[in-house]
Image (cartoon, protein in one colour):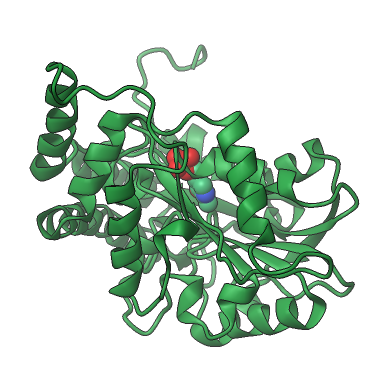
Length: 376
Ligand code: PLP
């Protein structure tokens, strides 16, 4: 900041991981590199859909959550962002797409870029910040749970209602589960396939970015069930379309990253990565407690690494962004950047080193402790 030279800024804005990858996963990545160093174990191009061992491990990972996913339905990718965007390619140009507002901007932008008609689904406080069903018939619905930016996770009942809508209208749900590992409440669904009937109407997109610190390594996957059906496509067709799209326009995820993913999905990898998720969730608790002590109205941050803060009456998201920056030197993300229904809110991220999170929270408490606003 030019006007405040030398001032330290505290970042609660960005959804990027900060902690070192856990030892068992580093070991997996190392193994991937080692394999490349010997003629006997070297591999070049692999299957575009992913290494068979990894596809099988993913299928087993779903089985442990009560979902029956065949490895032919698993498509390994270089992360959720590209799949969230590219998946629109297998649907007709005149498809109407419903996106959550506020929501992950890629869902909206990719739909617009691919020429689809976009319909907003409001995510009001009354609905646990999950999207209200579209009033008109749509062909695709992006649902993200736990939701970025609002930090709330859908209940089974809520997911059942989206599945019921999709089945009734022969629509497809694109379920973005990038934050599923942050769900602590065992009653909340971590996969859409925990809902009966979802395999006929939902594609699920997953990522190891936030679950295992793979934001830079890059690995995710998309499940396209064989039994998916739309008005004009029979069983197996969308799986074949996605297979065709991926084998033509994608050359597979890095073999090193895939070895790392195998390590993430191992029993030891799961234990260690879950512990790291718990570290970020402790950050979330510190932010929640600090903001509550400053009598701010907050949501989320219990089953997700994001806290959704209601700005004081009379201020806009950007207005409060400026106040937090000027007074407490804390950088947050104005809710309005996630859609017009995000106006009046801010997103705070729990990704950060513990000491930085504590410093940011102390600064907010010191400078905003006396704000007379209602607590939720
Ligand atoms: N989906 C949501 C909701 C996200 O917030 C993000 C990243 O911030 C992604 C997908 C992208 O994840 P990846 O790093 O796997 O591309």
